[in-house]
Amino acid sequence: MELKEKDKTKLLEELIHEIKQRDLINNEKVILDEILKRESLGSTGLEKGIAIPHALTDEVKEPFLALAVLRNGVDFEAVDGMPTYVIFLLLGEKKNPGNQLKILAHICRLIKEVSFVQKIRKAKTAGDICEVLEEEEGKIE
Image 1 (tube, rainbow, N blue to C red):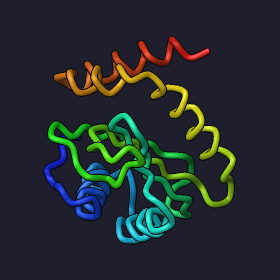
Image 2 (cartoon, helix red, strand yellow):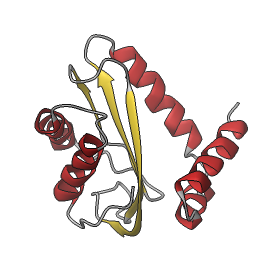
Image 3 (cartoon, helix red, strand yellow):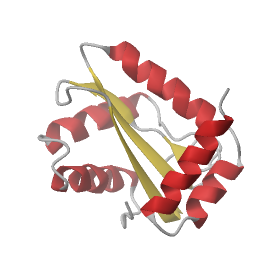
Image 4 (tube, rainbow, N blue to C red):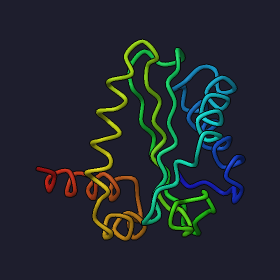
């Protein structure tokens, strides 16, 4: 998804709205509130231009992951102080939090290379992004 907002909270709102527009979630307000509650504990902005906002919710029946690429970056209060360009939004089931932890760990292994963000940012289409993800997945041991 190509998002336009530059403010972290408004960007999350826009991302969740886009997911709702695709009929992938039902209650965007509940999900936004849960994501923002998690962000209030500490930013999910990592280093190398990546953020992984996440929350456990009753709004999903199985873990859900969305990917957004920001061409110009946004201040996501990342630990390295750099702009964020790639956002993985993860929603896990409250009744089974272990699944979310496994996915978070997998994403962390996937993104450990600096070149990951560069490759994603160079991608022109969703198909190109999927190819990068498949290529990087193949490198995980």
